[in-house]
Amino acid sequence: MTTYPVDSVENVRSSVRRMITRHDMVRAGELVVVGVSGGPDSMCLLDCLIHLASDFGMRLWVGHLHHGMRGADADRDARMVSEFASGRGIPVTVGKRDVPALARIQGVGLEEAGRIARYSFLRELAGKVGAAKIATAHNRNDQAETVLMRLFRGSGAAGLAGIPPVRDGIVRPLLEVTRAEIEEYVRERNLPVTTDVYNFDMRYVRNKLRHELIPMLSKEFNPAIVDVVSDTATLLRWDEEFLDEQASRAFYASSFSEGRITYVSTEALLSQPLALSSRMVRKAFADVLREPRTPESRRVLSFLYSLKERTQKLYDLGMGVRARDEGDFVAFFPPAPKNVRVELEVPGFTPVPELGVSVRTWLVEPEEALSLQQEILRGETHFTRGVPSTCLPHMPAARRGCDLHGSFCTEDMPGRIFLERRVFLDYNKLQAGLSGKMRLLVRNRRPGDKMKPLGMRGSSKKLQDLFVSAGLFRWYRDFIPIIERQGDIVWVAGIRLDERFKVDAETRVLLGMEIEPSLRHQGNCANIGES
Image 1 (tube, rainbow, N blue to C red):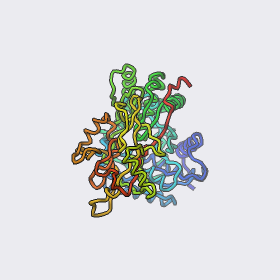
Image 2: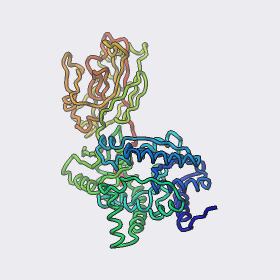
Image 3: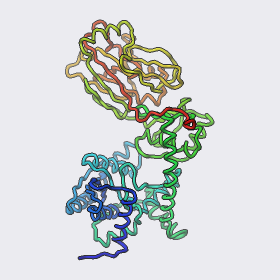
Image 4: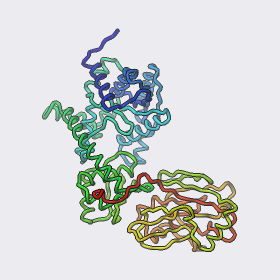
């Protein structure tokens, strides 16, 4: 029987065991997806988890992502990982993404695009196989590199607290193990590993830190620089956890999210200490991005100081996130969605997550259709029949009143409107002139969009002009659902119905349509200092 030096193999396994136990990373019976690139870190992690699996009662599933780069070398990596896992009775899934294309589409670097692709692949795999956790091979050196990168970029305590051991189903059992210990483990266990040439490409900031800056700091200032930085991150994380809990209470008590946009009480932001208000801004930032990303500290501080002084209304928080001072509230916007196009179920229910809404359609029962038609023709309100209007701050309260054919109602509340989200259409008119099956789509706006607004017979109007007339600020416009029938705009939700599809005296069959904004959280929008 082969034995290995206690100071390499057993030390690493003991560290992994402590991390799993201390942070309750895995529970008996759980399936864990292990992200394995084939490099020393991930192969060490996989080998440790195989050894410890029976102790914790966990089951393993390996996930490997081919990045669409490095050609034959990447193909070889995938084969090696598959053979290693399969040879030990562990199921493995190999995915492939075109990371260079993703980088171009999202306007990010290859390193960031690869990170996005890996987490997306691992989460998708975990969902398919029913895994409770995802294990990644971040180590103590990764922690130090991450903290230094964020320090140089500009980050608050949350960023400088580094990589957490557990977050959102992601566990990192190697976080207390150094890269040197991992390399020794791999040698002693004679594990097959691959080498990614991109790890030595000095065009990437992390590689410069790893191969140039940290060795220099270790030589010139402190040989234990990796431990010092990593331990400091741990201390900051303890403080951050307490402050984050307080900021969460303040944020959820003073904010609400509808669709893709998050609104935070201006008074609440300005009344809190900077330690809390800055974290509230970061929570709004992550809320609209739908992922735990953080803005640069200098942008957060600049935003809060400007908000207090009321020196501007529009703010760029980075990563495509923007904020607008609406008076009583600050609206936080995610990056504008591009080319949203989803076919509607008619009748049925269709989620459109890119716009933060769902669309419900139904055919009106014959016994109700006639009475409903008469109400519409008499000009009586029909949108609120059994369905309360939804309060959405899409437009300033510049106007009062209600367009019964699909416009909007407002009250005297600065920055807020009651968006009429239900409309009825003539179903036969929607089908008229079509050679095949009628298809309704929901999408967002496009350059040159035109429609024939209700009441404007024979003439078209640009959507741009309708938005301006409605007082709709430009950042909101990308999130307005537009219903289209084979190239014709049918309804611009909350703004206007097209004249060609309205209910009239000849209507016999009605199609109901309702927009349901997603409500991720709904605070009381009050100053929490009063609670």
